[in-house]
Image (cartoon, rainbow, N blue to C red; front, side):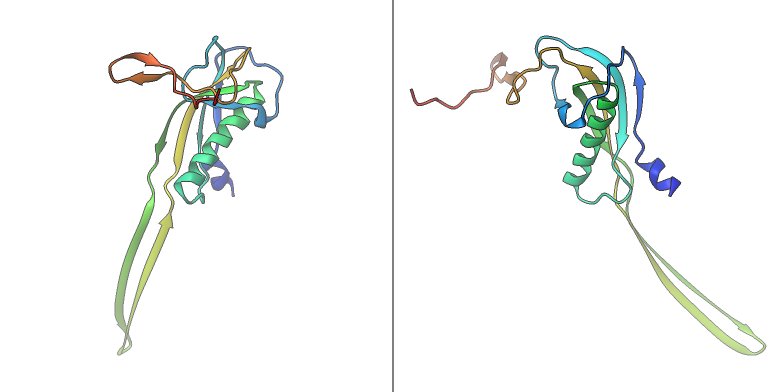
Length: 158
Protein backbone atom coordinates (compact mmCIF):
# COMPACT_ATOMS: atom_id res chain seq x y z
CA UNK A 1 0.00 0.00 0.00
CA UNK A 2 2.85 2.38 0.80
CA UNK A 3 4.29 1.79 -2.67
CA UNK A 4 0.97 2.74 -4.28
CA UNK A 5 0.77 5.93 -2.23
CA UNK A 6 4.38 6.85 -2.97
CA UNK A 7 3.95 6.36 -6.70
CA UNK A 8 1.21 9.02 -6.92
CA UNK A 9 2.80 11.45 -4.48
CA UNK A 10 2.73 15.17 -5.03
CA UNK A 11 5.50 17.39 -3.76
CA UNK A 12 5.78 21.13 -3.48
CA UNK A 13 8.49 23.62 -2.61
CA UNK A 14 7.57 27.02 -1.24
CA UNK A 15 9.06 29.93 -3.17
CA UNK A 16 6.83 32.64 -1.72
CA UNK A 17 4.48 33.45 1.13
CA UNK A 18 1.68 30.87 1.60
CA UNK A 19 -1.88 32.05 2.16
CA UNK A 20 -4.76 30.40 4.03
CA UNK A 21 -5.94 27.18 2.30
CA UNK A 22 -8.86 27.38 -0.13
CA UNK A 23 -11.16 24.88 -1.84
CA UNK A 24 -9.41 23.13 -4.80
CA UNK A 25 -12.41 23.91 -7.03
CA UNK A 26 -11.41 27.61 -6.82
CA UNK A 27 -7.96 26.94 -8.34
CA UNK A 28 -7.64 27.66 -12.07
CA UNK A 29 -5.08 26.13 -14.40
CA UNK A 30 -3.28 28.63 -16.66
CA UNK A 31 -1.35 27.65 -19.78
CA UNK A 32 0.10 31.17 -20.02
CA UNK A 33 0.67 33.88 -17.41
CA UNK A 34 -2.61 35.64 -16.56
CA UNK A 35 -2.83 39.37 -17.31
CA UNK A 36 -2.22 41.82 -14.49
CA UNK A 37 0.52 39.85 -12.78
CA UNK A 38 0.60 37.24 -10.05
CA UNK A 39 2.50 36.18 -6.96
CA UNK A 40 4.42 32.88 -7.01
CA UNK A 41 3.81 30.70 -3.94
CA UNK A 42 5.16 27.21 -4.66
CA UNK A 43 6.54 24.89 -7.31
CA UNK A 44 4.53 21.66 -7.54
CA UNK A 45 5.43 18.28 -9.09
CA UNK A 46 2.91 15.46 -9.33
CA UNK A 47 2.13 12.18 -11.07
CA UNK A 48 -0.95 10.19 -11.99
CA UNK A 49 -1.77 7.12 -9.92
CA UNK A 50 -0.34 3.67 -10.66
CA UNK A 51 -3.65 2.30 -11.96
CA UNK A 52 -4.92 5.29 -13.93
CA UNK A 53 -5.78 4.15 -17.47
CA UNK A 54 -6.51 6.38 -20.46
CA UNK A 55 -4.61 9.51 -21.47
CA UNK A 56 -7.48 11.88 -20.59
CA UNK A 57 -7.93 10.25 -17.16
CA UNK A 58 -4.19 10.60 -16.46
CA UNK A 59 -4.23 14.26 -17.50
CA UNK A 60 -7.31 14.91 -15.34
CA UNK A 61 -5.59 13.21 -12.39
CA UNK A 62 -2.41 15.31 -12.56
CA UNK A 63 -4.37 18.55 -13.02
CA UNK A 64 -6.53 17.69 -9.99
CA UNK A 65 -3.38 16.92 -7.97
CA UNK A 66 -1.95 20.32 -8.95
CA UNK A 67 -5.20 22.06 -7.89
CA UNK A 68 -5.30 20.25 -4.54
CA UNK A 69 -1.66 21.02 -3.69
CA UNK A 70 -2.03 24.67 -4.76
CA UNK A 71 -5.17 25.02 -2.64
CA UNK A 72 -3.23 23.85 0.43
CA UNK A 73 -0.93 26.89 0.16
CA UNK A 74 -3.77 29.29 -0.70
CA UNK A 75 -2.97 29.67 -4.40
CA UNK A 76 -5.95 30.43 -6.65
CA UNK A 77 -4.10 29.43 -9.80
CA UNK A 78 -1.50 27.06 -11.21
CA UNK A 79 0.72 28.14 -14.08
CA UNK A 80 1.24 24.82 -15.87
CA UNK A 81 4.91 24.31 -16.73
CA UNK A 82 4.48 21.03 -18.59
CA UNK A 83 3.53 17.37 -18.61
CA UNK A 84 5.46 14.22 -19.52
CA UNK A 85 4.85 10.51 -19.82
CA UNK A 86 6.79 8.04 -17.72
CA UNK A 87 7.83 4.51 -18.51
CA UNK A 88 5.47 1.58 -18.45
CA UNK A 89 3.58 -0.55 -20.86
CA UNK A 90 2.99 -4.24 -21.45
CA UNK A 91 5.54 -7.01 -21.09
CA UNK A 92 5.25 -10.74 -21.69
CA UNK A 93 7.55 -13.37 -20.22
CA UNK A 94 7.74 -17.03 -21.20
CA UNK A 95 9.45 -19.72 -19.13
CA UNK A 96 10.00 -23.44 -19.46
CA UNK A 97 11.71 -26.03 -17.31
CA UNK A 98 12.20 -29.72 -16.96
CA UNK A 99 14.15 -32.37 -15.14
CA UNK A 100 14.02 -35.80 -13.66
CA UNK A 101 13.81 -37.26 -10.21
CA UNK A 102 14.52 -40.97 -9.51
CA UNK A 103 13.97 -41.96 -13.09
CA UNK A 104 10.78 -39.97 -13.62
CA UNK A 105 10.85 -36.96 -15.91
CA UNK A 106 8.82 -33.84 -15.57
CA UNK A 107 8.44 -30.60 -17.43
CA UNK A 108 6.67 -27.33 -16.88
CA UNK A 109 6.06 -24.09 -18.63
CA UNK A 110 4.44 -20.76 -18.01
CA UNK A 111 3.59 -17.40 -19.46
CA UNK A 112 3.43 -14.18 -17.48
CA UNK A 113 1.90 -10.91 -18.62
CA UNK A 114 2.41 -7.56 -16.92
CA UNK A 115 0.23 -4.64 -17.96
CA UNK A 116 1.35 -1.41 -16.34
CA UNK A 117 0.03 1.95 -17.54
CA UNK A 118 2.52 4.71 -18.16
CA UNK A 119 2.48 7.36 -15.46
CA UNK A 120 1.86 10.98 -16.46
CA UNK A 121 3.86 13.67 -14.67
CA UNK A 122 3.11 17.38 -14.39
CA UNK A 123 4.90 20.43 -13.03
CA UNK A 124 3.37 23.80 -12.25
CA UNK A 125 3.81 26.96 -10.23
CA UNK A 126 1.16 27.68 -7.61
CA UNK A 127 0.25 31.36 -8.00
CA UNK A 128 -2.02 33.92 -6.39
CA UNK A 129 -3.80 36.19 -8.90
CA UNK A 130 -5.25 39.29 -7.22
CA UNK A 131 -7.67 40.04 -10.08
CA UNK A 132 -8.27 36.81 -12.01
CA UNK A 133 -9.34 37.22 -15.63
CA UNK A 134 -12.82 36.05 -16.69
CA UNK A 135 -13.33 32.28 -16.98
CA UNK A 136 -13.32 32.46 -20.80
CA UNK A 137 -9.97 34.32 -20.93
CA UNK A 138 -7.49 32.87 -23.43
CA UNK A 139 -3.82 33.82 -23.79
CA UNK A 140 -2.78 35.87 -26.78
CA UNK A 141 -2.29 33.69 -29.87
CA UNK A 142 0.68 34.24 -32.18
CA UNK A 143 -0.24 35.38 -35.68
CA UNK A 144 1.75 33.85 -38.54
CA UNK A 145 2.45 37.32 -40.00
CA UNK A 146 3.29 39.37 -36.96
CA UNK A 147 2.89 39.99 -33.25
CA UNK A 148 0.48 38.18 -30.97
CA UNK A 149 -3.20 38.88 -31.49
CA UNK A 150 -6.25 38.34 -29.33
CA UNK A 151 -8.43 35.37 -30.31
CA UNK A 152 -11.45 36.22 -32.43
CA UNK A 153 -14.85 36.23 -30.78
CA UNK A 154 -18.24 35.33 -32.15
CA UNK A 155 -20.26 38.27 -33.57
CA UNK A 156 -22.99 39.40 -31.19
CA UNK A 157 -25.56 39.85 -33.96
CA UNK A 158 -25.98 43.59 -33.42
